[in-house]
Image (cartoon, rainbow, N blue to C red):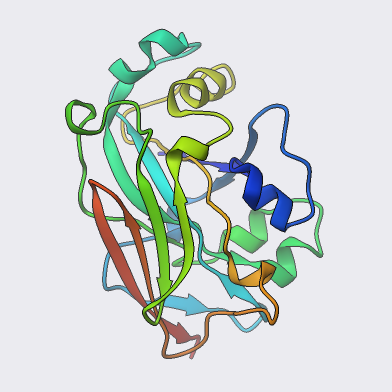
Length: 210
């Protein structure tokens, strides 16, 4: 399977990082080693001195497609999940690409809930939240996506043939710990929750690597 992620897909999130909104979707990837389920621990590696969670709506592909027209994109969706794009910021902003910062084991918690298109539609108008130890950090809405779900499926499928089980993480709203003053980094003993309206919550403890 492929875990295809979209960066800076909320204009306010791009702005809080000091970036201009992208003119095309910014694609990066994670590997299967990052996947964990609800209740499993996010492990903080010793190389990471600042680790953030990112609350995201995830799209799971249901059938194979290549160069899918945006108007047909919803026919290729198996359903929607809640995802957490965990990121080692000190590494992300020290390197020119994000594979290492986003790719540590346990850095992609994913909900067990899978909600079909018949209930969620095109994924718009969904409240997206991140809570760290009960404190709301991110509070956004998928209406604010720069590139919506049908556009993303069409765009991504021009690059990759999409296969059943592939995931597209659609981007994260503003409020991340790195952009706050003072900065808020996850630490050993924390609990992070990511919630997407109409789908569910993925909650994970945070532990330092042994």
